[in-house]
Image (cartoon, one colour):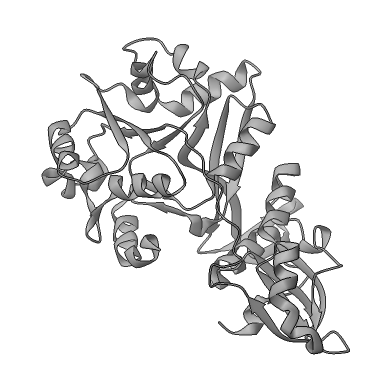
Length: 350
């Protein structure tokens, strides 16, 4: 990685900063003035700002830390000790004028903070027909479509298991016996229970079949997405805000492929932008949910989970949003995205 890839301008927007963080695969960027260290911005700084007011276009100078951690070159040998004491993974080394000479990145695992485990039940909606992924789903049920050499649903389970989850509830319908047969052959340290959906009930109606079976906070996810995030942090956010549901949402940029014209009075040109990008948050299809939600779902009624979210919001119940970066969400719901996931299967395995 080139050192300058971690350097950004203080007028960068939050959404652009998140893109830069994804590129360098670190949790921090440094604001510099011709190599002179000015400030630092972490993924946590960005997330807290978004949660505070929801504005993705805020300049990072509004949230940056203008008293960043650093060491002088003469003290470079103390870097590991300093990083451990301050629980940081990236530390700039500067000269007497505070020009950044290099950065120490602790990536050998010894000082990397241990990922806090959570043992929440995970509910996976695995009963859909996957019509958008035809002809793949002519052969396989959507959950068993392979990404590399591992089916998407097993990748989802492996991700959650690595974070401490050991109990999985699969709501199955289409080609359910094939799904069950596959997992019967897999050596696993986690427990799977199946909930048979006799008729399509949607992503919301299906979890109504779990009444009396899940009685604690749980994670709900579609079977065609992977979320690369620390769920212990999402769970803490969920509980701290006393949410009934917390939606995991990904930042996204939609680039308009044309020049956009704003017209003033009398047909005069007011302004124009060439191929502008519009930032927004999108629902990933992954949630942290309280068991109360299950108990209030009518039996055998077709209902999608976003409809449940909206109903609860209309009733004044707490529904939260937890933002993640665009590159932390892999979606195979569309054929082009499926091919993208296959090309990135090595990254997904990391």
